Image (cartoon, rainbow, N blue to C red; front, side, top):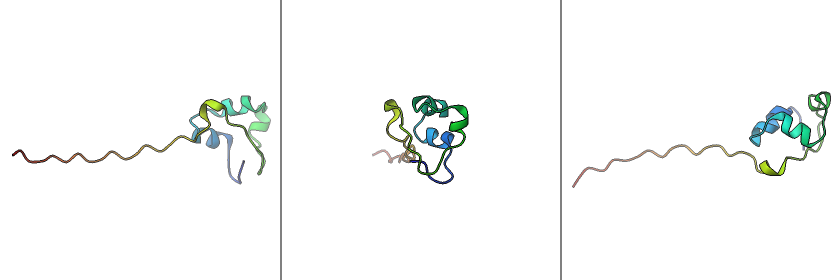
Length: 67
């Protein structure tokens, strides 16, 4: 559901998509895609139904002394 301040580009990026992917899937014109309404429901294409996860920070490798 669209919240205050959301843009289609922001929503799409959270799912690893382009804004056009979501616009096309929801049948939105360019004008509609750039003028989302708070509370508007958007359907995310099934291939990207889960938000993209932030990569985990790399664990530091610890060298153990030989012996």
